Length: 133
Ligand SMILES: [Zn+2]
Image 1: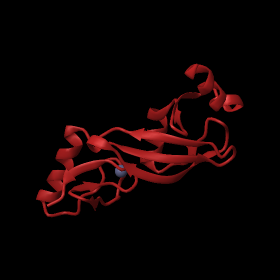
Image 2 (image 1 turned 45 degrees about the vertical axis):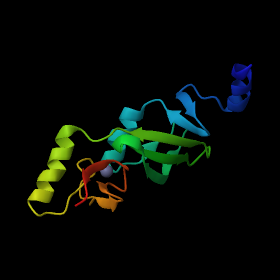
Image 3 (image 1 turned 135 degrees about the vertical axis):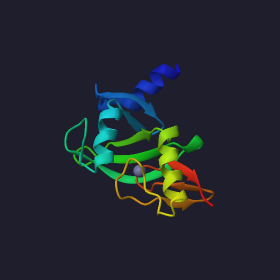
Image 4 (image 1 turned 180 degrees about the vertical axis):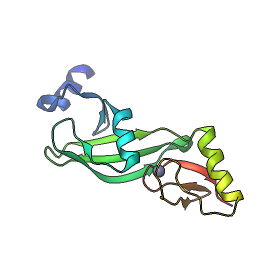
């Protein structure tokens, strides 16, 4: 039963390059490829043509992030998951802080981290890289 109703929800909008659904946001199949473009600040190609425009960034549980995107041609909305910080990335940020420098996002060059509650996070990927002092 649930299977049938889910199919109805996806309906004619089904796109072969879209892997799965999360709520009302579609998940992108090639997240890794898109992420590397995103880290470099490039324009993100949309699976349904056109480009993906960033609607917002949200921190997730356990230090990961989410980027919400909308396709400029189809207006379909997507959620791209950003993996949490690696040990090496966290160390890089801690080293900057220890040296008395402003902590930058290890993935977004020149992007300073901002304080979100008790953590330092990047406003472009939503990932938390260090504890705020
Ligand atoms: Zn970032």
